[in-house]
Length: 139
Ligand code: AMP
Ligand code: ZN
Image (cartoon, rainbow, N blue to C red; front, side, top):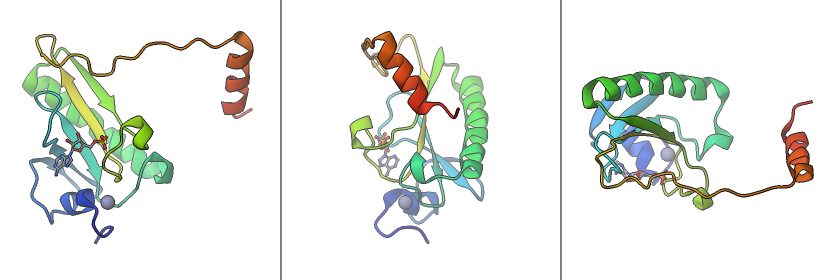
């Protein structure tokens, strides 16, 4: 089952052992082997999707429902000061494993590693903003 030579297919379907914290018919939730912080978890669907663009809305909604449960467990058990949910698509966005996965990264004010998700800001003219809005709008 799964796409040949995809490590997350093998992990999600139990062919490679992982630090599993939750499993159902749709997905497996594991601890990231190289965590950004204590409790860094990954939600990995059992079906292979390269990225968000190939995922159907029903699977996406089930994954986000699981994310709410994992987030609550992390909050209750690890008492973080915050939590980031990150999902990378494409190498330019930092994706390194090309099987869809969602990161849930608890954040601690005391952590050394606190430069996760820092970006500077770009400026666009009002005209450019209007063009972008129109291009993405459903209307
Ligand atoms: P991304 O950069 O969004 O593709 O994230 C890939 C994540 O998968 C990284 O945070 C890795 O540490 C993690 N990872 C890679 N291989 C494994 C593995 N065998 N078990 C658990 N996590 C892994
Ligand atoms: Zn896969």
